[in-house]
Amino acid sequence: VGASALVTKLQAFVDLDRHDLAQLEQLSRQAGTVKAKHDLISEGDPAEHVHLMIDGWAARYKLLSNGKRQIMAFLLPGDFCDLHVALLGQMDHGIIALTECKVAYVESSDLDDLIFNNDRLTRALWWVTLQDEAVLRRWVVNVGRRDAYERIAHIFCEIHARMTLIGRVDDDRLTLPLTQDELADATGLTAVHTNRTLQRLRQENLIEIGGGSLRILDVNALREAGGFDPKYLHVQQCGR
Amino acid sequence: VGASALVTKLQAFVDLDRHDLAQLEQLSRQAGTVKAKHDLISEGDPAEHVHLMIDGWAARYKLLSNGKRQIMAFLLPGDFCDLHVALLGQMDHGIIALTECKVAYVESSDLDDLIFNNDRLTRALWWVTLQDEAVLRRWVVNVGRRDAYERIAHIFCEIHARMTLIGRVDDDRLTLPLTQDELADATGLTAVHTNRTLQRLRQENLIEIGGGSLRILDVNALREAGGFDPKYLHVQQCGR
DNA sequence: CGACGCATTGATTGGATTCAACTAAGGTGG
DNA sequence: CCACCTTAGTTGAATCCAATCAATGCGTCG
Image 1 (cartoon, rainbow over the protein chains, first blue to last red):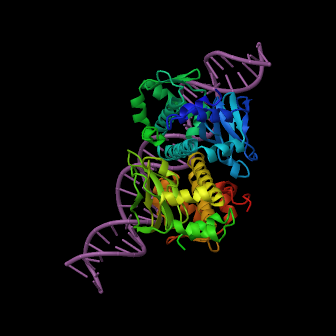
Image 2: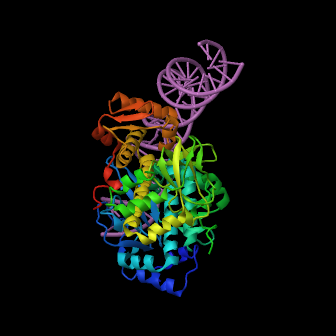
Image 3: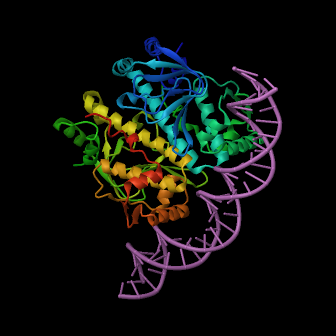
């Protein structure tokens, strides 16, 4: 059950048989826990094994010399933190646990097994990589050309879509363990401005947020507000 | 000679033998030309073959409903436009030729051959993918947490580093066929503000720019100004 | 209880946008 | 060959979105 979020996600793309499932389960043999607000991987860390999120939220971030921080991705259950880092010498950015996280430490050799011997899973992992890249591109658009209101709306839509993909949304309600500070660092805003923008979204009855959870009251309206187009996640059109 | 920029780039990472070179040369068998300001690939285009830049500049971009445009990457000779798009149904963004471009149309089967039969080249292509992703992450940081002055300085450093990698920099001087509009769309600024920022960089004797070329007068000072750290391109530490 | 993290609010400042005009360079056609 | 038009770059002035500075509320945990 360690890799269940990953399995759920992959099944949106391909049908997995018993053997695939067993092989995926193998990956999370070795797992550990990282406390909230602690680095899961730090900048400069050597690439030892690949990290797979089992449970909890983490963030890919970069610290600037002027003290500012930019979050470049939120990592949810089923996400790989550093899928291909095996090729590289060291991390050029850090990953911090936003909540307590359960993480699997995947041996590179296990991944190699999977990539060389299982075409279906290889394709599925490629798809995951593509999706991560597509999300990253959207983030550039988000911080580059959208105002605060659109940015927050868009990021909520993305989280909603991704959480849906791993089966963690119920009635448009989901766990959202982000502080306004963290949300600000992901959207390129200040915490103060993020706060005011959240208030506006609440006021307009688009969302309910607080106490570690988010409820989207009007998905279509929120997507409209954020200029969100779900097709970049490539869920629909990928045949089974 | 079609794939020469790609070859130069890959050789920063691995040593290629005669056979590798021949195989790379194969890729650019079929090539064509795209006029400046024309779409090389449009949003929504089906994935037919993979596009490899041979010569010229292009940009990966996204148009928003409000008419704004965000450029998410500059594509230089040796860059793949859509390396893995074969898996996906259609493009979720467009690619426009900024100058007249020479482009190779690579058959997916040729790529498969290469990936399944040549470990060294496979690793090298992975490395290219990783580098593209690392650049993308820096762009998020750039537009998210840097001011106009830092953004422009940083992007010039990146271009300088990448052009160096394909052997197109001479005495810190390089061809830069970007309009201020395009630069603005890449940095998330307006053309007007980009213009004023360029003037400041000139005034401070960091760069000479104009007439389609850029000269960096003080590389270290420009890197300092942009908070640029070349290590994310993973050139140095990747053993041969 | 006091300290700390997080959310909220007000007042002020400033970086960047917007709108608009104008120059310079290049290409085209009559 | 010059009048015309387009494209790119530059400049000024007014405006605005978001940042900054600052203070307060509020709950939790040691």
